[in-house]
Amino acid sequence: MSYEKVKSIAINEKAGTVFITSACSNVSPQEYKRWQCTYLENMLQESGRDAVDAYILEQYQGGMMQDGATEYAQVVKLYSEINLENLKELRQLKKDNRGKKYIITHGQNYFSVITRSRGFLTPAREQAKKFSMVDALIKAKRFSGAQVISS
Image (cartoon, rainbow, N blue to C red; front, side, top):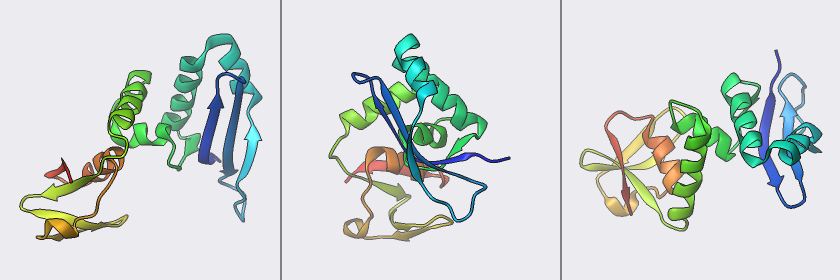
């Protein structure tokens, strides 16, 4: 079964448009294309932004949309329960912490590098990798005992 590998989702409420940049998982080589999603545009005009957000979250939760650094993918990675309130909470968290940097600690050490499979610690705070609040929370969730602190 195929799914959409999503790079970005652009929703313009004023213009009533929804554009998705994605590639189909079962086509090789993968070619990302930006396309206008009329189904979501109709939903936006008839039911509003919350309905569109809830539908997209459903698609991520069901596996029909995956990947990407979209806020929807971040909600799936960050929260155990996927719902519209968590998406709103994530948006507020991003807004409140815009421009601020955070580091991840583990005991007396700091993460200097985090790869897909592991993290590397350093005792020197100045060598710690700095993250946005949301990225730090997502990455810290992977390591038992890790904490996010302000840099």
